[in-house]
Image 1 (cartoon, rainbow, N blue to C red):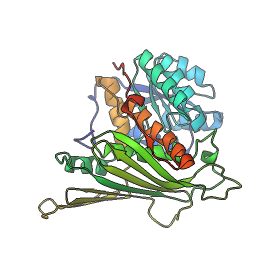
Image 2 (cartoon, helix red, strand yellow; image 1 turned 180 degrees about the vertical axis):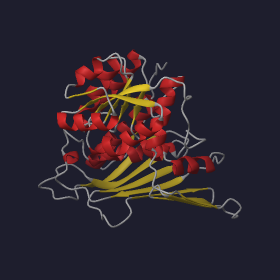
Image 3 (cartoon, rainbow, N blue to C red; image 1 turned 120 degrees about the vertical axis):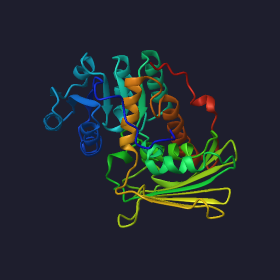
Length: 352
């Protein structure tokens, strides 16, 4: 995904991609909907939410044809080309598989599923249907991450990477309920595991994690925080610190990359500092606003539907980070590193 960090899609005369929105909460409203309306590519055809009033409100804002609280109605609509799913995590796999079987292209927020069985069922449904599938690992498509990857594209040396993600994540939040949200490592950590994989050209070979429950244990019964180390086939190492009991007055995320006497710092997806061993390639970039890659993700998804070719973060990429998240929990439980075999996540894709 190197190159222009803000690709255009199709031409002005191309037919719009007619999309149905499933899950009309804050994330869909504040993140996806503005990009959809500004894209010039997508046309919101229908909105769906278990809370019909939320679907009605988004329908009015988007100028959609109708709102519903029944996803089956939306999936049966022959005038919808694709769906964007932003529901609670426990419904992602079933909705994604049903959408694929209905012949819809799918962009589903993370996680892909709450366990390996669910994830493989999604991948198989997508393969059989021959539709495009994208999971919402947007950080690997953030403009500054794209730039960092381009800076190091010609460097064969192994890399050391550190990523911090910290925030106050209330113990009462549904994400911490294993059967609903999957927990912090499955529900959000997959974002970061994908980011680390996107910054290393070699495949991951093992994961080791140490952590546990740092929030009140009478409310949270599964690991919510820890340090995870991914080892890659070329010897590179990517480490992330995930803290749920974080400080809201401190920047949420930071990425440091070291390779062959070169250093890159990405501060909260807002600025990049690059220092070269001989100062010849030094570079500083400050964006006008934080950009975590959501616009690029949506643009590339639309481009794949219109022009063909693979969608960003397709089934193999989606499965890679999901399986790492499950292995993180296994490593925390056993205190041992867990191997990763590419055959576990590289799957046959059948895209238009």
